[in-house]
Length: 390
Image (tube, rainbow, N blue to C red; front, side):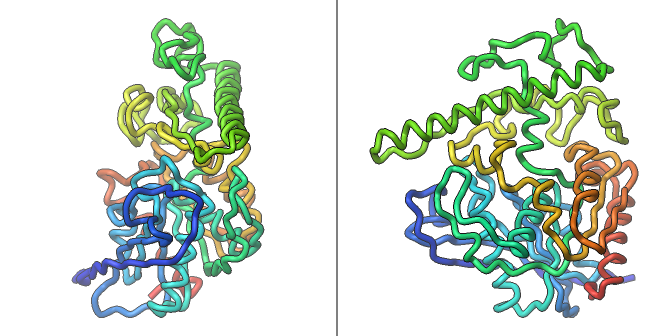
């Protein structure tokens, strides 16, 4: 069968926003306007009234295998960027909702699509849950730091369906399950508790870990994450008390990829390979430049990384969703933790909900074209059954 030629249209979008200070460098959020970019992928000669929309809080989506390959099945796919793309250090999740909402309104009112399917891949999964929950039941008028952001009044347009694929519960859950609990002093990451350092051969606890050790380790991770959040709140309060023009602060969090799942495949077992992760060697990435939450502002930490403060918590957002919902777990996922997809599926409020597992599939279907095709078939058949396929 001849594959259709795929058109790639570069789109831009601009809308007005007044903010107390700039959070992004350059044109993407300056002079009172937010400027956004996207790529529309569509098969030449095939019309569609349904648009599949991808967005991730911090990375582009048009290079991912699924959105790249779905147009060959007749789908129109929008890979939309928000203002923080490729730099999440100052990211505010509530403002990402506004950017996503602007793209969905543009897709319906300017591009002419009648129906929207939110496609949440990886970290885009909890974002789509957050968006749809606020579109159906808007409540938010400020950020976790108390800054005004009128999500409630933005009139976000609800989507017609949600796909949650190889995704996590939230950025905060990913971080708290990956942060290195051995760090005792945030200003000196070399000051560590050896019994909690899974990369130290002197640690008497070695894989396969006991259930008791995992419980101790997880509790220590939560303690460290909450210590950082408490420091963030205290620093914001201090800056506010000063009453000057300095109202924000950036900081570094060391050692943030120490999830025992990546060194012990028996922890939340699936078909993944032990000793590896979606970013390569986990010990190297633990303190590397692309670590989770490595560089952050105070406000951003509360909005996206704090387990107790973020509103983009899929477990809280999913019950608010009523539209058809498809969950796809990758059976060998080395990025999204194994339990997360099922946990979201269990609590989602949709009466029409479906879950499928693609056995042995890694996070990006790397070297697995047959499993990519299997996942795409699941998506195609599910959407077609609901009259959402071309």
